[in-house]
Length: 524
Image (cartoon, rainbow, N blue to C red):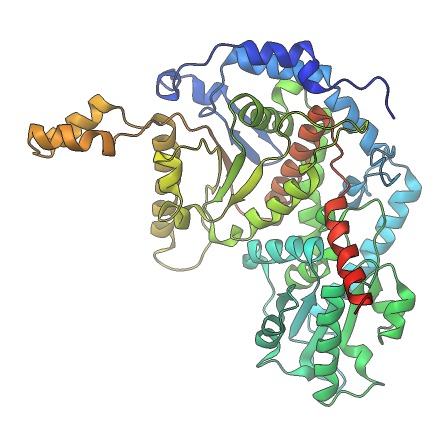
């Protein structure tokens, strides 16, 4: 128990924020020509434009005072030094070590850096043999298809990043992901594959996850039924696990088992051997660039003053929207098809981390904590749920994500890109500014409508606006910028947990479901 813990809403800084007057409407705030530049931050190749958030300098100053009072950045340094900030499991939280093990005098110590470098070299060496067509199946044919079976953090991260970095994928190997134990998911993946050219990667730290082992067992049976003998099965299997006794019993040779540590949570593990399928797809050089991008964002987060700190600023804007504007959800809307899985990945990261109702000292929480994170590709959403955001009764903050440059081959690729970004910018402006009754009425008159129709239709075609949003810009979608973008959200989640006074790195709700499933099975 921490007897010195103070609930956030009881602090003077929180109460000061609650007493601030409402800011002017965004359409008025955006009249300031300097706002766009002033409310913009850049770090590690990612730019945050938060000019369309419902804040002004007074609000931002008060938010930073809250962060200082809650000791957010000092807590981040405690985390990176390996202190056991995950106190309910008595564990350190060191996913930053996975992408910073090469730095001199790493704060987590040289022993951990050595462990990380050793395992990184092991799984990247293996990944390159598959990526380069050097890994052979039992008949001597090169592996052409990799099927990763895993769930949660063992699936969402590598699956998302593999699609996001499709432009960097090699030509020799296709990577597939199966997470759901519904029989059809595996069936449709294996149908059409040549078992003699297929490698199955089983990703499960304990090698006991029910969903994953159900899939893995069926995939193994498919390999055997396709003519691969028990003696040769090892050429078609690999694992990411800490349970080497169980992987050996499954027929996986020790040199094809890659591990990670209990100080890495599943949703923060894409940087570890869990990223093996990603490394197979893009090759070791690109995977190292992916790590480097995340490390660059780590350094920005740890060493940039608060007012210029990109993850901290994003976290504070989210606190403002969640707790002071009363917005219970957060929409994440990428405007790049390759980031299609990004929202689902961030959904797990945020909601599994900050979906908590107990403070770190055991007290019940009396304020809003983690928001409901949802969304998907912005262009698709415009033709579906954006109607609710524009004219519904909910305030839904939005994170728009755009890529400034286009690298898709094809003569019309730049035109596609122009249309995509045109829509992103138009939606951000429309949600912020809306259209008041007077402007709506005038637009209807300009369209030639009668005054009777203008009067009748104006209420239906006016838009309140004042919807807060961020626009996150990547100059290009590369391994480096993707790594930085993911790390940005990781640190945002941490900062918000520190302010709310909750644990971000346990997930007892997930564990309860697993426990009950096992109990129900054993009672049959």
